[in-house]
Length: 115
Image (tube, rainbow, N blue to C red; front, top):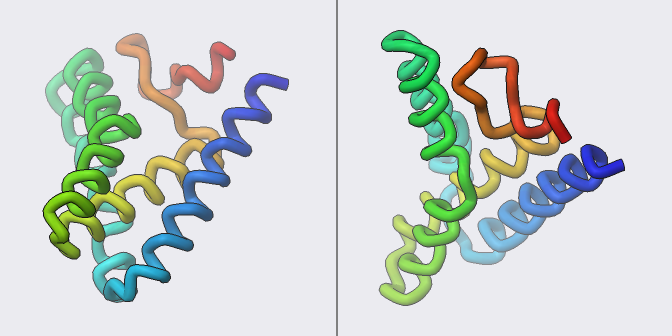
């Protein structure tokens, strides 16, 4: 049941990010260009599992993306706001699909598998 809640939470973040992005009048072309940029962090796995998990988790936690959204709002900077909302949408999409934060044991070992 907990796993289902985490998937629904990811779906909610994705939908809310899309809603606020759309209402902000930001570029949808930019959205689709940047949507998968956080996955570049998987390149850390070329070094080793520990570095890969650290980099992946760093770029797939809501703390940084929420910080970008807050900075974008406080600074009235539409580019920073767009990056934060796109980043949050990406993380929500990942969680909705079952991709969670990684353990350093293997790429497939995520917090969603151990719930």
